[in-house]
Image 1: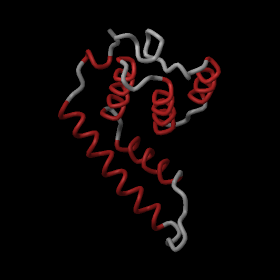
Image 2: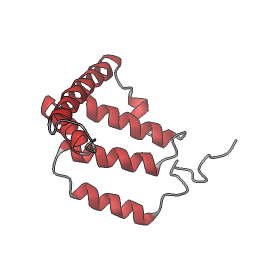
Image 3: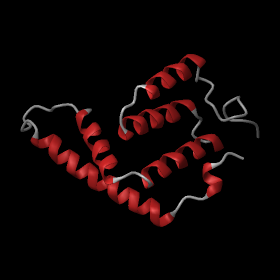
Image 4: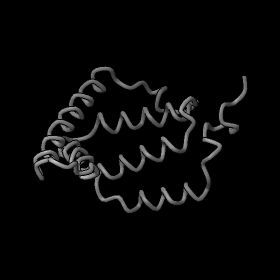
Length: 128
């Protein structure tokens, strides 16, 4: 059948060494779990062909990060996502973002609980 990406390791044919260096620099600048998780997830989405084993491994590692995240980490993630939302006309300043943050935090807590219940197999995290 052949490789979907043209590379043996599952890296997208569009991924460049320059992008790798840029994301390494971004990761070094991360101060919180939320920032690091978001940068790593973005990098993995862009770097790997989603159909590859390497992509599946990267996304399993993202689920592992979520499953071990503290309540404080999830709150930071929800707040970061809320800060990235655009203000829409007619919204009450602050209220919409606070509502989004609370809702997103609950979603993240539910996701974490589901991941913990389902578990992550060692084979999903290691590349074979």
